[in-house]
Image 1 (spheres, helix red, strand yellow):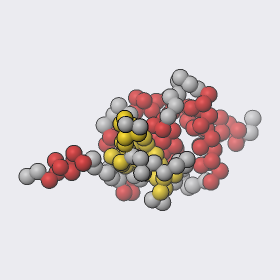
Image 2 (cartoon, one colour):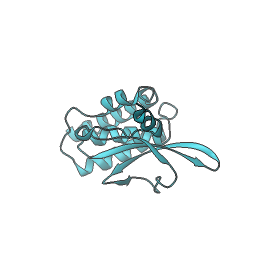
Image 3 (cartoon, helix red, strand yellow):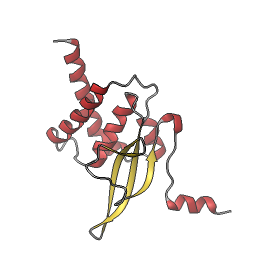
Image 4 (cartoon, helix red, strand yellow):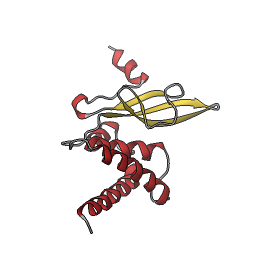
Length: 153
C-alpha cells in the first residue's frame, strides 16, 4: 500500500469520525465550539486536498447514515474544520430565516466575502446570527439580542 493511499484512507476515516461527532459538538457554547474548530497551526494549502475534503464529506454523509447525519450543519462544520486546518481562509455562518411560513436555520461557508460551495446564495433567505472566523481575526457576529444587551447601562 502506497504512502498516498494510506494518508487518503486516514483522511477519510478522520472526516467520517468528525462528521459523526458534529451533533455533540453543536451542544457546546459557541465560544468553546470555535476554540475546538480552529487549528493551532495550519498546514500550507493544497488544492487537491480541498477537493478531496469536499468529496470525503459528501461520501461520509451519503454512505454512513445514520451514523453521520445529513444536512448543512454536518457539512458546514466538517468542511470548516478540515479547510481551516489546511490553511483555507473561510468563515462559518449560522443563520435563521422564514421559509414557507416557518422558521428554518442554515449554516454555510463564506470565502472572500461570498458563500462558498452553496448551490444558491443563502443570504437573501437567512439572516446571519453568528459567524466563526479564523483564529487571526477571532470574532462572532452578535445576535440582535446581544447588541441590545450591550447598549444597556
